[in-house]
Length: 345
Image (cartoon, rainbow, N blue to C red; front, side, top):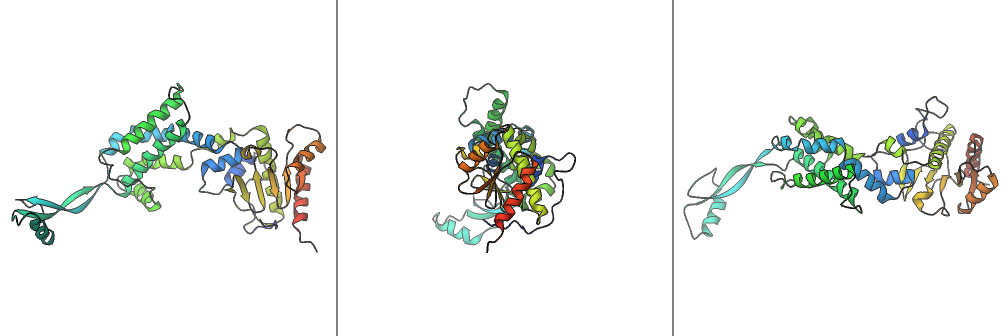
């Protein structure tokens, strides 16, 4: 980890804590590196176990309006599938269905005891394994897999309306993906070129529900969904984290986007470890800035600074600590972090 607080990049832009309507969570959400692995990112943000976030994301995908539209429109889509023509060798007896492939014909006759009525012809056939149908199949598989994640560990008798919709959509998506016209289509993530071709193709209207479902699967949880998962202490931590970032940027350039590593958020010298995500409040958690650990009191409204500092020091792993109980503490934390980052003679 770099000790310097000066990060290469452009000067900070956009909303700032001193602007009207500023929301620290929105600021943090916009600074997350894209594309992101949603489950691990949300787990690091709010502290929920990874499996719970995966289950929630599965519900959001499988019961989404985009999934409903994909499945409801499938009967029309299957009648409008894009296809391509390809040539294949076909063995014919006593008839010709296309140009004769003489090399293959001679081999076929030799295997048929010299039967002169055997021909191998080149015949056209309709191919379904093309980009547009790979997009469609992948969208169906995403809904089916999301439903599996959502219902894992739940009772099959659960009467919840949403879970019933999840099970129904998951079952339909898995069944539709095995339609005879789609059975030979490759089961693999479509490349960006395939998505662009599908979106710009002449049958794009038929495949738009599949494209919309894939967009939803890529980011199933919105900022508002994740905000509702934050408890009071987490919201305060996010506020302190973003205020620290903005103050650090006044002393240098814009910090890089936050990425997730080993269950924590990283942005240059700044790291955020959620105590619930780590599962043990005695383990190091809070906001790390260089060699300094910054955090709010374990009990947000605890008036005892000494008690809060003792609790923070106990999990600091030898780092210096700063407890944040007001905005002045954030300024002191930044000054302390910069001081610790300075080379010593």
